[in-house]
Structure formats: C-alpha cells, structure tokens
Amino acid sequence: MTGLVLLALVASVLLGVSDFLGGTIARRIPLIAVLLISQIAGTIAILPRMAIEPFSFGASGALLWGVIGGIAAAVAVAALFRALAIGTMGVVAPITSLSVVVPVGVGLATGDSLTVIIGIGLAVAVIGTVLASGPEIRGRVPGAGGARAIILAIVAALGFGIANLSVALGSASSVTTTLVTNAVIALIIYAGAAVVLRQPIVATGKALVGAIAIGLLGVAANLCFALASLDGALSVVAVLASLYPVVTVLLSWRIHKERLQVVQVAGIVAVFAGVAAVASSM
Image 1 (cartoon, rainbow, N blue to C red):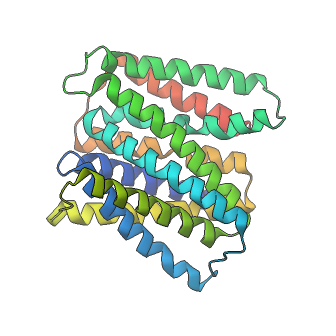
Image 2: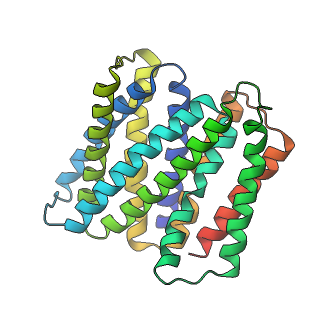
C-alpha cells in the first residue's frame, strides 16, 4: 500500500503544479494556445507507453471510457484554466476538489447506501464552497472574476469527476488504451476549437516552456492515478488524489501573494475536510 499511497500523492502534486501553471500562463496568452500546446505535449508524452503495453482496439471498455474521459477532461481543463486566470486561485482550486462527488454519486446510483459520514461530508463541503466563494461572487475580492470564476470551477469539478472515474474504470481493461484515447480525444477537441476561434496559437519563452510542462505534468499525474487505482483501495486513492488543490493554493499564496478573507479560509478548510470525509467513505 505504501507504493500506491506514494503514487496517489505524486499525482496530486503534479496536478496541483500543472493547474497553477495553467491559470498563470492563461493570464498572459490566449487560453486556447495554452490548451492546445499542452495537449500536444501530453499526447506525445503518453505514446511511448505503447511500447510497454500495446494499444488495443479490442479493449472496448478502455476505448469507451477513454473517449468519455477525454471529452470530460477537455471541458474540465479549459474551464479550470479560465477560472484560475480570471478568479482567485485560492478559492477556485478548492472548489474543483468537489469532483469526488461524481464517483460518490455513481456509487449511490448503483446501490451504495448514503452513510452518515458521506452525508455530513457533502454538507460540509457545500457549505465550505458557499463560504469560500461568497466574497468573490459579491465582488469583494479586488480583481477577481466573481460568479463566472465560481461557475467555471464547478463545471471543472464535474468534468474532473467524470474524467477520473473514466480513467479508473477504463484502466481495468487497459491503462494504455484508456490514456492514449483520452489524450487524443482531448487534442482533437482543442484543435477543433482553435480552428473555430481562429486565434493565433503562439507562445514563446517561459509561456511556451510552461505550456509544454503542463502537458507533461498532466500525463504523469494521470499515469500515476491510473496505476494506483488498479491495485489500491479506490477510497484511499481518491482521498490522496483529491489533495491537488492544496498545492495550487500554496503556490498562488507564495508566488502571486494572494490574500483571502477569514471566511474564505474557513470555507476552504471546510471544503477539504468534507471532501476527505466523503472520499474516505467510498
């Protein structure tokens, strides 16, 4: 279990850094440029895994979940990076940790019972979200994106929940097929969006390096999560893999010097506590 715990924690750290970079770079260059460049890098980075485990067109489950996960991830990442770019990272990032509600909802829909801990955890997480996002929605956070950032963060949470569930379910058939399909589908979506938007896909210097790093970090995180979910208790993996917003919050505090109101700090703590309670009961 120690190795699996480490993999899940590594996934959280990588995703946290990736999200911070995405939100930061999206403030400097067009969002579609960040998404497309990072996805190209991520897709190229995952292809060598086919030398370890061949891509299988016969793994229908992996293909299906790869497609679903790719669509969900494309939407989630785009929504998150935009929210982080226009909103307060310290508020936006914790809201995305509500993604754990998706697998819980699937479990309840398929026969799992709603335990007291899960019920309390969901309530605490929702209350925390209201407390953390309230000042931003009311415009009391200078320079924040207000309600738009919060709505985008919620959309991202839903997307990541579906994407993570898809990776776990698809990996049971084939890790490589799931991740490669996931990456290619997201790349197709971003390429199509770039054509429709007709925005220049230009990035140089630190922005280019950062965008490439986002793709590489995302692939590494997905691989760690997929491998950890194969042999570990999904509840444990879900708890540890949902800690990535902590990294984003710490980086935004340290580098961007973000300051939060007391009620927002209380809300953020409540979100993390509620999510941890829910995930640990899965």
